[in-house]
Length: 385
Image (cartoon, rainbow, N blue to C red; front, side, top):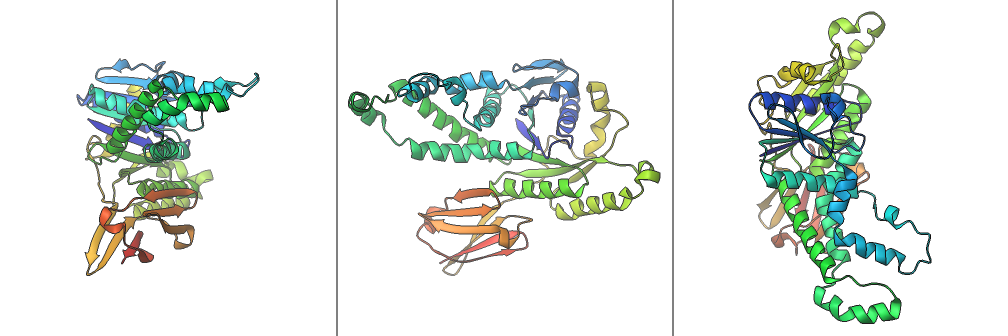
């Protein structure tokens, strides 16, 4: 099964491109599911169907759904919900809106990822197309397997046996509830699911991300940041799609000044992303709504087949030169002044603007100290001695 996620700045046309790709693959005989993780769903509008959280067939070989956050919330919480509700109200005198407090920021994105894992493991489709939320939310969604799993494993180190012994004493002295066995069962299931999810999302033979953009400078800048951050987390971006390219005849007269601006924007995208395929889609004469209209976009990919992995890059490499180990991390479009590199407790922490990632190097590097580092041709080069 292939999983293809479409992301990008809001308003660039991710939903239309996702839907057109799903329609094309379904017509070629692939069993396709297209799913929206955007809380402001517009997938149903694009396809011309009313969708919900259950896959429904909308054309031969093509199913679609829009994630129901409330339903996925209930499924994911399990016994955690009861425990946290008891914990939050244990010292309260009343008036606390616990149901609202239990919707922690970002959990919707995690539940969306769990849905991807569930669909993949059910093995009912050849392709899953994911219409993602705008860039910021997508980046948060894709960081969760690593960040959330790490936080939970460090924040809840208590073992089941210890909790069972301490439960009566702690509850008597502090009036604070201790987790019961079923809470630990759910915790273990959650950790296992997070582990499987992380393995899946980093499998470059299965999962691809495609960034949709337009030729405007502001959008191009965000596309570059998006691409860099996805590299930071080792996700495989295998294509860039430029949407809403104005045909030459549309730029005459009043829009004449846009000729050079669009030309410069297109050249910048082609030069910046030379290592992966770049596709262009002209601005259409009508809204990209309903399956018959989406069928007209089947030529978007040219001679490429959108089900294929269109490009694949090893984002991390480690080589040895004598006694020195050299780690190279692909971080295109990063300025050295925007980066921070710290080695602490066997981990390497890389910060780029408001993004941060902690890398655990291989065992043979854990006792090595970083001697120097530099940015060179879009790569962070780290030397260990």
